[in-house]
Length: 342
Image (cartoon, rainbow, N blue to C red):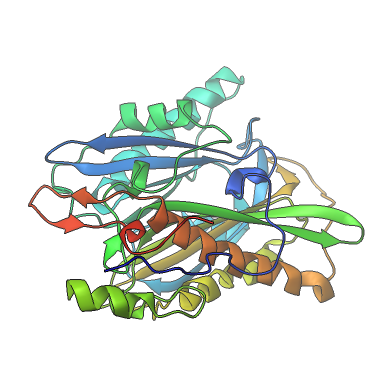
């Protein structure tokens, strides 16, 4: 099949310099990838800031679009509207071990900064990579999580790396993807970035800028399957918002999934988590003062979240290589069918 020439320019908003979540100042991303005959898995960590997030928390929000997922830490975000740790992504059966590693990381960081932690709320997200990875033998532990944190940087790999190594998206190879958009309000410029872990969608439903590319690919592969995977969406922004406003914004990530053809199947876990670096919340105090946008200006952020999510999912597929799993299952790269040259 000859490669298709598809318009890969998503949306109409201005992109950040890296077109990644790390365009938001202070945000870094690190991976650790396990790539052996038996394991195709890993861990990805989003570091929201360089300073101590536990004593200077961030406004945060979460939204569960479909709850077939095992993410840890959402209850406290929902109740308090704050984030106090980095965010880790891994595979389904590794959530517990990664959570334990994040507790240890936070306890060590607190001791280094001169205080003791008695309670902490690590946020650990997951998608199931059992088709390509021997998930029963959990390959991610404290060493791998700490390595991902140590590797965190503004420039980071995308595709089948870290927590994206064993992911499948629209029947093809999925993984980690990211994109960003610039928001201009009241004469100021802000950034909204999205990072996704893609493991969702059916092949025949895949559309890029309105073109039904999945139908063309399925004619060759006959690889269509039900839409029953998962997608984790992490939104970072320096836009000053309340947790309620942020929840409204991150819900628009679902628009990006839908534009690429996802119908959010029964067995799918679509979970969105967002944080803002604009207002830091002290761990102790009596009164606090925060800035937030006027509600009349929020639609620009809605569009930014939708566009960045759509492009991030596309990046997760286009930047992924073909991967052969432990049982011989092969998931091919979207690049085999799409011409990515300008």
